[in-house]
Length: 263
Ligand code: NDP
Image (cartoon, rainbow, N blue to C red; front, side, top):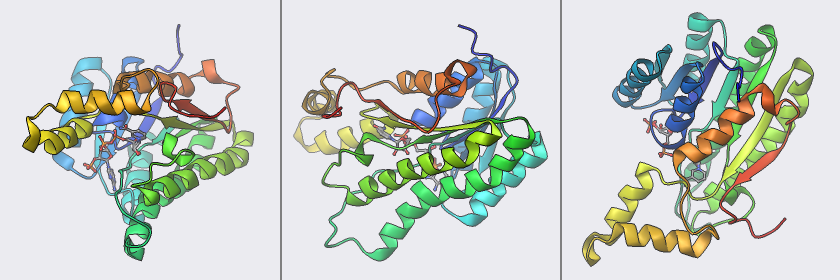
């Protein structure tokens, strides 16, 4: 299937590892110029260089904290100067949380609001006009199944991801007339390096069977009984970026191995 993406420019936040990196690779494999954004400059620079060498496309690295106004301004300005603007924006940067409502302080709520919601608001506001000037584009939000089916140890994550999903819907209505398609993806379990690190930490004192721990998590939550690979998620994102998904607007798609327990 020719996805017709060659030569497009894509911004991927959180593009240095995990799902974001896999999306960047999936797009690069289609000939897309990618701009990876993350805070740790060395890691994002090294991954951009690897992608450029592997897929023979231009791959830029931008070190910025997208949870701050300064960080999103840096990203918007860099993309504008280097490429005129993007055709694709993947709002992917995010992190899990762990707290109770009773104990979490205001500033923790604010930090996750800034990371999961305000980053998407500011980047959408700053980059959509540039996309429009290029004839249109695609904006995708990476929320989570937790946006609608919460895990009880992370109320801040659940709440801010639900807000991101709603923001995606609102933005889609505003931008559809500019030929910009906005959608949201809600993944289930995706086996990123961070999951493996956590599993190793949790099992370190009890024999170190981190793989067994992860298998148990998959058996407990996902009817498919395994994690997705980042590439399996990335395939879905890449499809949504393409003209093959030209009638997909303002939706949320679950990619969760059957975990969602409702229709
Ligand atoms: P990882 O922790 O593997 O990667 C997170 C990426 O985001 C890194 O590149 C990190 O780089 C970057 N990042 C984090 N905070 C910021 C920030 N403030 N500014 C800029 N970049 C930032 O995450 P995953 O790949 O697991 O998750 C990606 C997205 O998918 C997240 O939004 C997550 O909530 C969502 N998701 C993940 C699931 C999973 O099972 N893995 C399931 C459902 C949803 P750096 O630290 O250098 O900034």
